[in-house]
Length: 242
Image 1 (tube, rainbow, N blue to C red):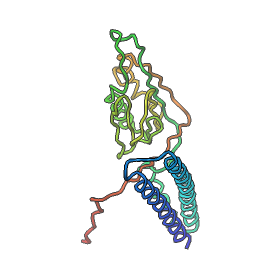
Image 2 (cartoon, helix red, strand yellow):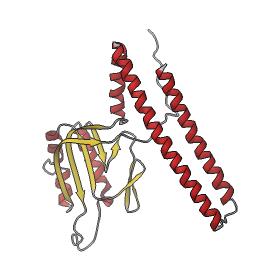
Image 3 (tube, rainbow, N blue to C red):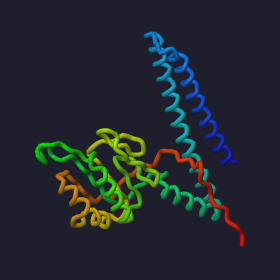
Image 4 (spheres, helix red, strand yellow):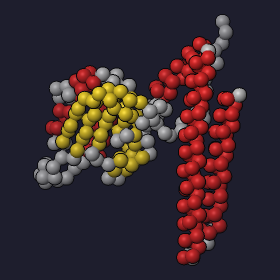
């Protein structure tokens, strides 16, 4: 019964968000159709947009609360049943693997700051131009068995896209700029050794005159991956009984 109520709550919130977006789209379409926006109408539209954004924020908060309640229901069911408890633990593990859970734990923090402007014949260059060095850093951390990684507080997962966008970088569709702060949860000593290896990633960054700070931390917080991934073409392979 509890799970049914939580699903109904999520469905209602999703429907509410859809209605808000639909109303907002129709309002903009009607007023912008002729390409002319009188000042008074533009101000009215701005107020309507602000109201829609506030309603969206309220709905998003309600969605977070609903997800929290679902977790409580799942945990409550697990406390009452050993089989359900095992399922709950598996669910939590896969959420962690997929990046859909906020995590904390020991690890390392690597901060990469821009080099001084007078280096390399007076030409300015940026870590944004050396995107491959960031990708190499992620690869090194993965090889060192990092359990969670973030770039400027954007969670890195198998679905993460990292690409250059003009003078900036986009991670998970979010624009970030220098300094680049990469956090990783795992064995601090192992992660630091992998990055600080002779002629490794830290050596390479310093060779190109980037200012690098690498520290071990007892407790690092890495936020969850917030983009929704939908499988359109893929589906589980059905097992054939022998």
